Image 1: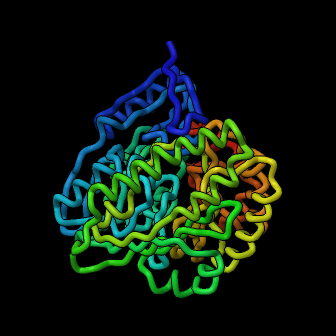
Image 2: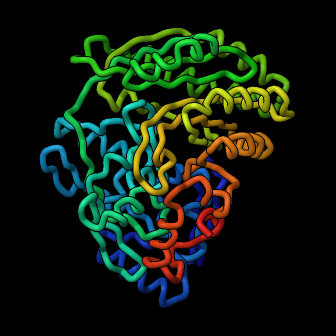
Length: 429
């Protein structure tokens, strides 16, 4: 009897021969040994928020819902089991007067899934979420639990913090957190000319800066989040419901459904949406500002680029959108991160600008995504590991200076490819 699984977007599906729900690292090791004995491969799944086939398997699907507890809090070091979701993590940290230094805009992922794919937020002073890891434990193909940190087994640490599930399965993660803090969110419409004229200041003078471009227009929504002493300007409940629930989900979802059925309506809808934007400023706990609800389903591709290549990539994307027979229903998101030293991090060795493109679930996307990838690859583009890409190991080896070191460690830890699937075979060889 097989067990069906689908990711959040519905574009990846699999039927596993069996499903395991281990409650400890020891049980996780037993699952691996049993799978190897039966000739089955293993993949752990989180919340299904990756758009790639990273978690697809017809062997043993491992779900970490019974490994989702707080382990300990020691000052600013917080250790949790790898199956905890970011939403639960944020609430747990807040209860201890702590917070993650930065977050992405979705909190449904498990911490292990978010870290393993290089999930990031925005902010010139912050790397991806994996840069906040102080230590981790990983259960490998032979059932052993290995610990690592910057000083204890540093090569494993630099590989395992972003590992695409190819080295083993995370069991615990120790995060270096910060005292809980408040953000002032300033969100307002602008033009692309406004963004480009002041980009260095926008990125350099705000703790967190990003913008959303509305296709078929010159309009954007700029978002600037900065730390402030107190939550002195909370957003009224009705305004949060109107903006984040009704307009950004209910109305936007209806507009996407209309555009999918009648593609010619997409450009005018985008223009109307861009003109309808209004400014808002409010203060709230950091995780309440960073994370927003996402109910409209989509598929996504995101590329990290050297920051100096952003304008060329963005202008090329505009040309793609204007010439594509596929109508683009979602705004394009642009974010910024600091360099890091993690072997398979998109930000390895360089400050990054990220461009994320989306398409409504069920609408055509492949030509749009492939043309964008062809544009960004020669500019030094690195695909987000949890978002769609068509790259191969041969291509990616040129993009990551430590790619060969990662695959050599994979050969050592998983010589029989217990954790492999079609996706890892394509992107890692």
